[in-house]
Picture 1: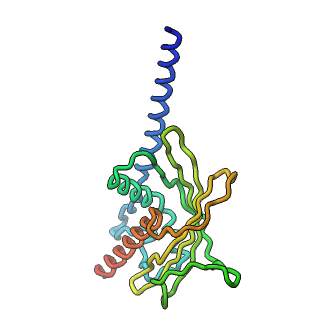
Picture 2: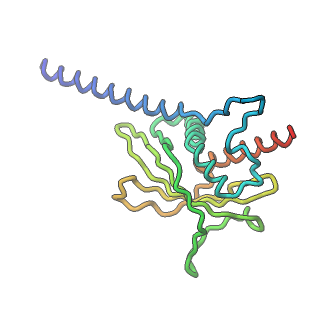
Picture 3: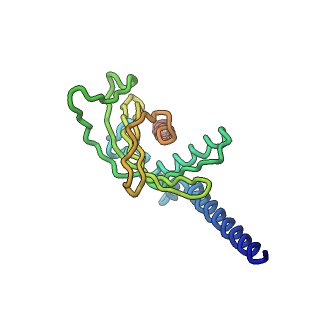
Length: 210
């Protein structure tokens, strides 16, 4: 009986340690801050490297700067969504975003190619990028790879996300990715829209000062 109780005690301590490690991993991701503004020097106003006007940025420059900040924006968006839904069973965090590709996807005749109605008549650019995400289940953590196909429309005051499609696969590649699914209302898309909104706001603030 004592051996059994001792074994149960060790299992309980190990389980507690596992939950603590999981909590610390989540905390580190949540505390990942957005890049800070540089400190002013020589009396000049400090400007973030990507603080140029959104409406004049080419899509490659915009995407490079967006992907740097995307994990932080996505994780905060996910955290707000969990608080609103009071969901605690599943935690997904974006660790890194990158690998942008800008060549438009071509399809054979008769093959469906998604197009956003909002993008009609506008300058629309396709961007492909990936995310590495960690999903925390009740008893384990798994890493997922997100493959995203985003449509950006250029308007008078800057770029906007017209639509987005996503495939999800495991990092090991043992299973094929899921079929493309529209994710224009998903966490990544919401994070992109928030980043673009902030970029437009920075541009307007600069214009007001000049």
